[in-house]
Image (cartoon, rainbow, N blue to C red; front, side, top):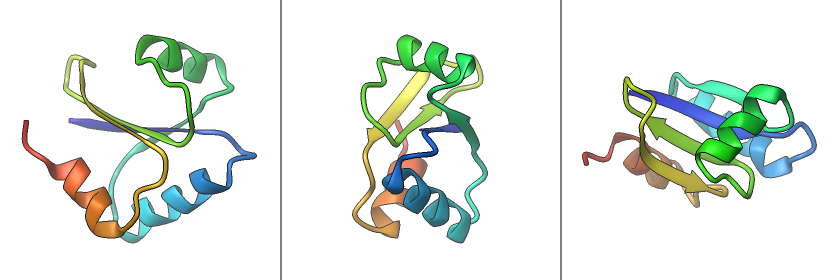
Length: 84
């Protein structure tokens, strides 16, 4: 499983989400949505708003997607560790 956070430098909620992920010690990859890689991921996974968390399997297939800021740490961890 791979966790990818799409963000932008100007996005306040993106910074809050980064802090939540760090406080929970959740290993993830952060990709600037305005970079070439970020634009490609946004197209591939239909990302329209930031921040967006993508949960991908080992073959880069989308398992789950969360757009926006979770309301709590519990909501974040439930989303990340949910079973399919």
